[in-house]
Image (cartoon, rainbow, N blue to C red):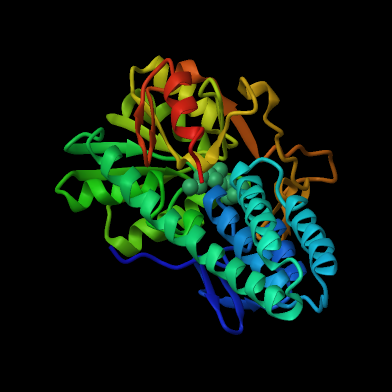
Length: 355
Ligand code: MRU
């Protein structure tokens, strides 16, 4: 299945598709400085939890590759600074921290092997971290395909499904999680029409999900966020499927702001509500969603639309995510299988083995 590539490793640096400019322009930037790549994550050039993880992995590899360190101690100190820089970019998407921790473990292993072998040892570390970043990307692609296959079996053979935000190729670097499920279902003969809420204030639904589905020729209807209740009540929606930014041990799930409201309405109208996410999105260190840090983004993203002010000079709030309690979730679809409530046993078993 061919989908858009939001991120790519090249000899010149990490290439990102600028998601802020979609769908009007398709523009790529090449980053050879890890600090600029970290800023690009903050600025939403790339976004979506799994894609943020891939970007951090490539960013760490990039930083180490360009490091001028002459000794292992110097490289270790620089590696720490690089990891801290990425850790400061987006607080909710746990795939970011998963990628950083994975690189910390890999660096520690490589450092033991490189001890005492100076220049060649440092070069081996640089090369091995690039390989690790490519591996992270490849694993994301494979996870999406598996999530897609497991999830497609849960979707109706025909009719309407709703999603939220963008959990597509742009958000993962593969075929997407929630959109990957929809893509796989359509490919295997389901006749679906996707209701896409625009997802204010950043408009990932209108700008990104609508663009991806339209490019694939999958029928969709774009709605504004305040139409969600109306359509779940009257629009013949057979299932809701969304991605996730962080899933606590009990299944409570943080995803784009607005998801919680959709889940409440789906329950009210007896519509199954599915979460599709790789196990790298699990956070088994927290028992429930109350402990998930919610990113607060700038007020301007609410008071302005496409750079133009749409509100007077008043205070605005912009929590970028909300938490859907596990009891509103019908199933969590992962690359290891489909978890049903109570989620904790499956999440604990699958998450314990995450790479
Ligand atoms: O702020 P964003 O655009 O990074 O938020 C993205 C989402 O909330 C997605 O639904 C989530 O990361 C899952 S992406 C497969």
